[in-house]
Length: 307
Image 1: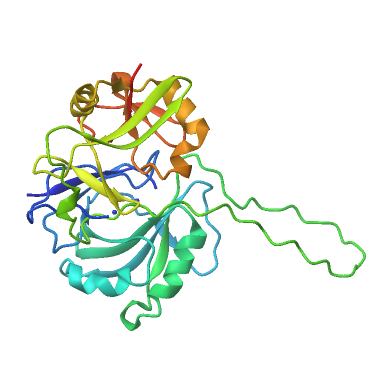
Image 2 (image 1 turned 180 degrees about the horizontal axis):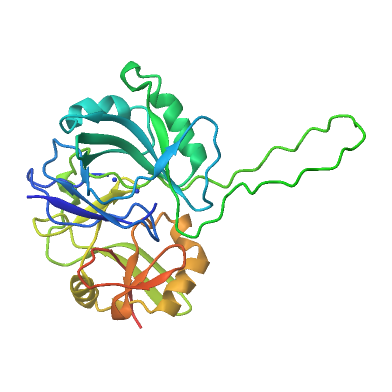
């Protein structure tokens, strides 16, 4: 059985059950660059869809052409898909994941995706320490309409020479949590719920409204992914609605979602954020604040409220 992953710009943990993987969807980020991926077994790397955008090469110290780009590391082209065991040497050196993408003349090896060129270059440096991956390079997928992240500076008029001044160190924002990884390690059987009643994994109370993230387990028909070293369910709209009803709750409204976001509870308590959540009326609630109308068949995180 195959695993289908829907990838949105910015992602893979493991989801294995009795050696079989179910149809599912995966987000690489939270806004655009949608593409599909499949995984036929736990012993094979996931395959990106042929139509998945991987951009153009970004060579040497060239600066990104877009402000909101995503990045891949190309790690070679092979006649056949790389076995999962062969990819282990890469996983020891990278912070992201390894994928294969079918091409007309073989399979392209890709590591990523990355939202930060800094992170991509750090991993590229490590990948190139492996003799068989010395020719690896970065690819940039530029978002449509995105302006260059490094606009050209006008030529400055000559100024009198002055003593050099040390620039203060640039303060980088805190690193985002590691993105989920698909099918690398088996999931412990202890994650299965003992009954049909959902388990509440995360909860909080804001403005007299109780919020909860339920987990229905890792049984045969339950899709899930790994984030913060825990499995989290990803369900269709109807299943999400039914899961909330089982615990006496309902799906959150857009206004309730924004209140939860602004509270910073999700970051503080490590709620899953790499997949959007289902909201009322088939709305996709993204951690970036974006709210999108989606089809009910998408597989997303579940957020319930009691009013």
